[in-house]
Image (cartoon, rainbow, N blue to C red; front, side, top):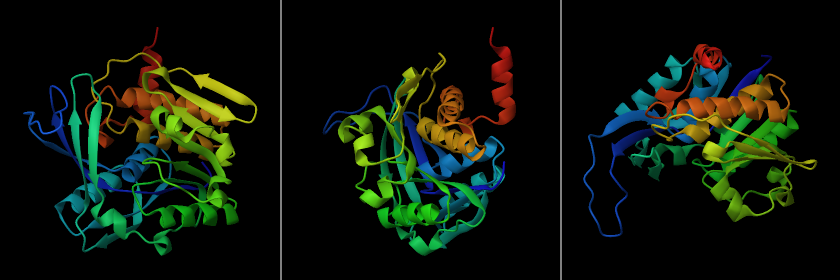
Length: 286
């Protein structure tokens, strides 16, 4: 691959608890033992891309605490360049995640140190693709996207959680990535001004939306264990494909396979496949 993939986004410690069902308002539900695993949309995306062999730089912020150490260890262990990660006095971001037996999850995020990320923290030198998500301040994401446009770098944004971006930012996204629930709230994605869009649909795969129409990429059938971080695995793999010069629909095909493999193991980053695992999966198909 020519050039680096730069990921701008959050880094959180995921506190994961298995529950039989989600509690109703005012109700207490007992769960299993808490697992603490590295997560956050940005860090997840960076690790997913690095495990596929990409050169990745992560731009983010963590606290000077044990959770910050956990996240930096996971990133560096996957081969991610963390020279643009700033350690701050605020606590590292935390996500409380309840996972039901069907593998679905409910998440509450406390951003913590992620909220301290600044536009001047963004480093795009050597980048071929920039991918950002919205668990960090919107001005940071907008700065990264517009700086990428000026430098001739392809910009991808996973608009999760959904936030209002300026028309100038939407106009350079290629693609905008959202899940089916986010897409339903946004309406006509191309009307936002984006160059292209990708809508992830879980077990149904993903839709590629361009001015030429919609192309559906189906997902393979797998045994779902935990869907936590599957969308981030998708975005990381998509960005790798684009950085490798693949057509958008071909990059989405690879991303769907990566995300599908990720849900067969528990956790976010620990579940992400390496290129070797991808190859074994392909060779094992009838």
